[in-house]
Length: 296
Image 1 (cartoon, rainbow, N blue to C red):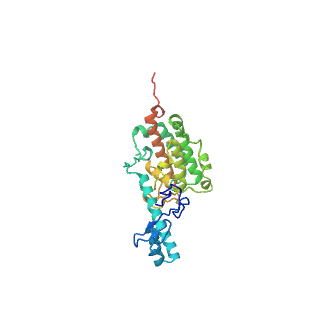
Image 2 (cartoon, helix red, strand yellow; image 1 turned 90 degrees about the horizontal axis):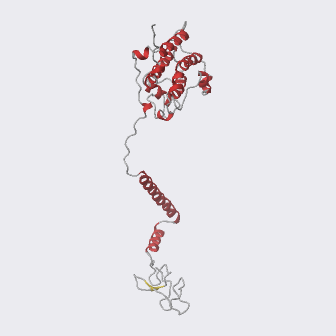
Image 3 (cartoon, rainbow, N blue to C red; image 1 turned 180 degrees about the horizontal axis):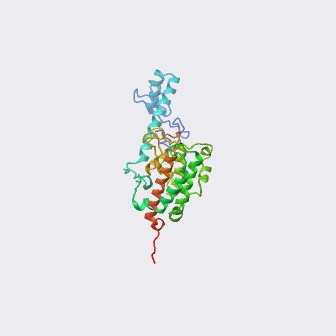
């Protein structure tokens, strides 16, 4: 450390260690040859050796590497140092706390389809069966359905099930008709035939409103080989599968662009109704109970 005050008169010394009042001169002894040097001397006046370790190290580097190589070395080691600090910061911010695996939300758990007599004999299921039979009258159920027929089946669900949601739901409520859901999907509106992908999007939109589902709970990867991560079909396909509503081509392949038959759409609508009745049986049993027969 350079001395800043004169030991004789306590005056401020210059950078070279010289006192302008009494003329005292501070000298630093070279540890190699014993020569006396001023405090700011970089090299010894006797042996020419660097007075500090950093100066001697710099002289050694200059003798081995040219200026361009030294610039590259600076950048290389600077990058390593920055990366190390960044990694340490990242790991330290994570902490050492153990996080238990996040439980699956209630909506994402697989919901079994129960064929109990109390469900199948409810007025709602009977009404839906009757309306679906009317749509399919004089039609081949195995043929590929049109977009118009998909909307008709959606309207059957809306007609028979919306009163349950209006009574039970707290935050979300289904729309009044299939056309309203179709307006939200302009790309589907241009299609003439119903595909498995279009049907899944329409059914998922209705399920989201009816069962008050959250989109993010199902956008966590699909089990179908033709639906990659972050695809638009990821959440609809996962939600329908979890609710046992099967409109996929196979268990492994969904078949987004494949046509879907009228019979498959009717079965899917019926399964939605079964889940709706089960929900009503738990929260508002009076909505699905058979009317009392009074004999006078």
